[in-house]
Length: 221
Image (cartoon, rainbow, N blue to C red; front, side, top):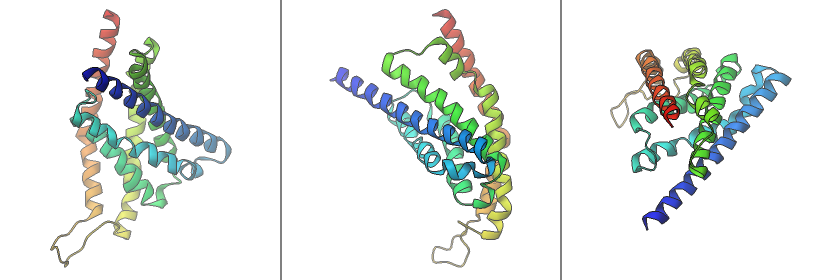
């Protein structure tokens, strides 16, 4: 029984990784194609649906960690996926005013290259039991450049959206109401921005530690 469940797990994770890989490959293809043909102003319109699908699928990774399908700690996975979903749905989907900014292009290219490398790496690991050494190096080195460009784009887009969040009052709840509850999305977005200040360096150090352990292990093997 244990052997059967192990096979089911590997098949499921293999399919999951390669399907999401295909989604991010589509995002990158349409982003670069649109950038070169019509300019960065039109990139979001070209990648909206595949971006939303590929990024939202990452919610399953939280469940994978919770039920023990993967060893990745939920404490590291949750903030990364949470911030990505906030950008995808809470900023880009909700506020069209920021979609034509060049930071959208730098964001989706940084995200898509990162995820193409990551999902294909784990796709090979689950399907074959190993990944090529060059793929391992890319998996644990590409973030050195792509994490700063991605984070800078995220912070920039949230900041650009703030005036539109404030004037639209979208997702805000005003009193009086039957629940006697108020919520201001503008200040919530400011809190998210503030979390980036300690959160980004912490995550970068975490990934540097991961890189050191993974590459040291590969040299020993």
